[in-house]
Length: 539
Image: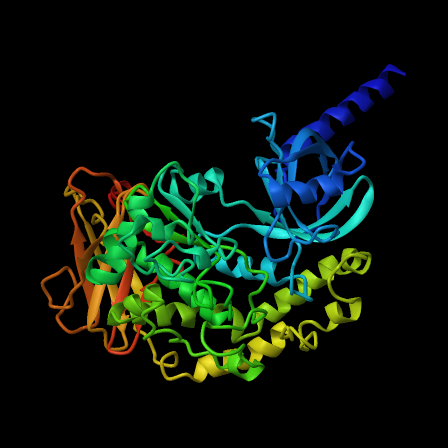
C-alpha cells in the first residue's frame, strides 16, 4: 500500500514538473481557437451596452472566463463605428480585464479587442494580413476566438492585440511619447472655420492647432505640437523628414497597403486606420491597424467611384505619387532613394508571400482551423457557402468582396512584371568582419566590415548602432582600395567602425543602391540585423 502511494506521489510530482517545464502558449497563438465566455448579471445587458456605446464612455462590469481561467469585475463595452448596430449580436467588443483590479491579466494581456470581421466572408483577412505585416514592422498579433455570452454561443470573432502602453513598451522601449490614432470614426467634416475639410489622417500641414482636433485622436497626455511639427516638416522641409519620422517604417506600411490592396488605410480614400507614436529618438512611427477590409474589401482610392476587380488587381504601385493631398506618399516618394526603398519593400513582400502562393496555403490552413466554429456561428454576416467560396470567388451583389486568391493571383503576376518592380536590385552577400589573427598579440579594436555587392551599385551604406536603445548611424562603404575593401573595383566594399568606448557589440545592416533599385542585407534587417562583438573577434 505504501509503495503504491509513493508511486502515485512520484507520478503527481513528475506531472507537475512537466507542466512547469512546458511554456504556456501565447494568447494569440494561431494553432488553436481559444474560448471566451462573458457573464452579465443584468437582464438588460445588451441594451446597457448599446446605451454605453451611444451615450457614454464607460464599461459594463461582468465576468470573463478565458479557456477556463476566470476573471471578475471585467469592463466590457462595444467598439467600432461603422459596424455598430443597436440590438445586434455581431457588434465588436472592447474588454478590460484590469478594469477594477489593475493587476488582473490573462497571460500578460490586460485588454482584449474583438473584431466582428465586417465585410470579410473569408473570416481570415485580419489574421492573415497581420501575420504578413508583423514580418516587416511592429503590428498587433491576431487570431480567432469563440465568444459565448451567458452561455449562449455568439459566434467566431477576431481577437486583436491592443495597441496600448504594453504594445509600445514591447516594440519601442517606451510608452510616454506623443501618441495619436487616425480614424474615420472622428468627424473631419465638422472642421473649425479656416480649416481644410475631410483631411482625416492625411498629414497635410495646417497652421491652426484647432484644425487637427477632428482628424486625430490623442492617446497621450500631450503631443499636439509634435504632430503639427511632423506635418510641417513633411510638407515644407521634406529633406529633414528623418528628424521627425521613421521613414523606413512609413515606407514598409505604404508598401504593405499597396501590395495587399489595403485601401481602408492611408493609401485609400480617408487616410485612416493607423497610429503614430513618437519614440525616444524623436521620430514618429506609423503603426498599422484595422485590416478587416484588406485584400480589396474596401475599393476607393479617394477619387472617382469604387475600383473594379481588374483595377484592384492592377493597382499602380506608385498610386498617389503626385497627390499633394497624400504627402506621406508624394513627399517621400519624390526622393529617389526613398522611392527605391519603397519599391524594394513591395518586391520583398511580393516574393515572400505571393509569387509562390504561400499566402494561399496559409489562408487555407486558417480556414480549416476555424471551419467548425464558423459553421456553428448563427450570427455571422455571410452564409456558410459564401465562407467556403470566399478565397476563389467574389461575394455579394452590392459590396462585391473579391476572393483573396481571385484578387492576389493576378495582382502578383501584374506586380512581378511591372517595370518598377522587375528591376534587379544589388545583391549583398559574403559579409565578413575582420578577426584577430591566430597567435597574434594585436587585439582587434575596431569593426572592419566587408561585403560583396553585385548588380552595379552606385552607393553602399552601412547603418550601425551599439545597442537597440540607440538610433542607427550611417557610414558609406567604398570599393576604392583604401577602405578595408581589398582591391579597388573588385566589388568588395568596406567600412571601419570605431566603437570609441561605446560598447563591445554592434548591430548593423547594409543598404546598396543601383540606378534602378535598392537591396538590403540582411533582408529582414528590421528585426534581425547582422551582429558582431569585439570579444568574439578577438578569440
